[in-house]
Image (cartoon, rainbow, N blue to C red):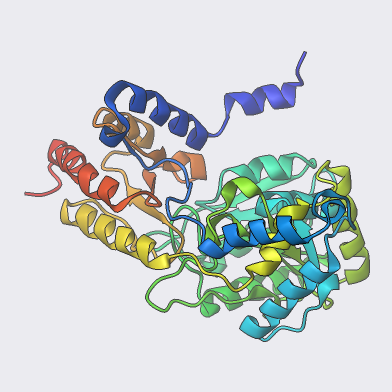
Length: 397
């Protein structure tokens, strides 16, 4: 009955989701407080109070037909203007409402972009480790994902290696900054190096190459780290943004795409992304949440809570002899597995009721991802289990 393509995708179904479901099973068996589920990037920090207040205010004051009705596929003009104005204030850009297309989260935005730009057989480059769903998004439109191997040990892009992966079929490069799963933030120097290679290859092949910046974790950074705004470095840049992490609203599926006027064929691209939003079945981003987003463009989630978790986990694990890069952003820690088989190590951790995601799910075997968007108590109470694992491998003498 089902297609061969989706049959194959079911077999490769998200390891992250599988571990999350396993966590629910173990919680019933051992009690939720005795299971340390680090599998899913589901924010534990609550949304700002202003979000709930906005929902109530909008429901009480706006006309029902506006709250629940259709609008332009790109979204409410006044919402898009508020977002553009906020970006201009924060990043010294020059956007207006025509540069913003509201999306059903960053995932919906990325699918709309890929629908708008890809022809069958086009190639999209990603840096390993990468968010595993990128492969499915690209495959949705007949594209091919091309993976640049990780530049160890810091997971920063190596321009020389990067350049080897371009062909005349290269249509786009995806950057996830701050990165899921490593927590690494690409610096301005990193971005300039990436853009230099893209410009070189664009000239070499005489083709258009887009840069897609996936930024749901932009606001979750630590120790004063800055995340460069990519449209200022390369004109053919899309920015995908989501309020899922920045405002702890993953289930509401609200975000936006930025399409700068400087982009090649900008007018046509804007029309294409807007049309793709409709024909992919989203039609438009959720109307109520568009209005809520507009009321909260400058709201902030409690980043200090994530920072506290980050420090406790990083210091705890490195103190036990585990190797990992200290996260600069997002809420993930990417730890080197003590054995080459990351899946086997995850099974060993599961015996201690610790749920991790193997790095092979992110195109980077030999590592595991730990999502620390959990309670502080969960991190503290998990460390004895990690200590047992450390002892098994003799990591601390």
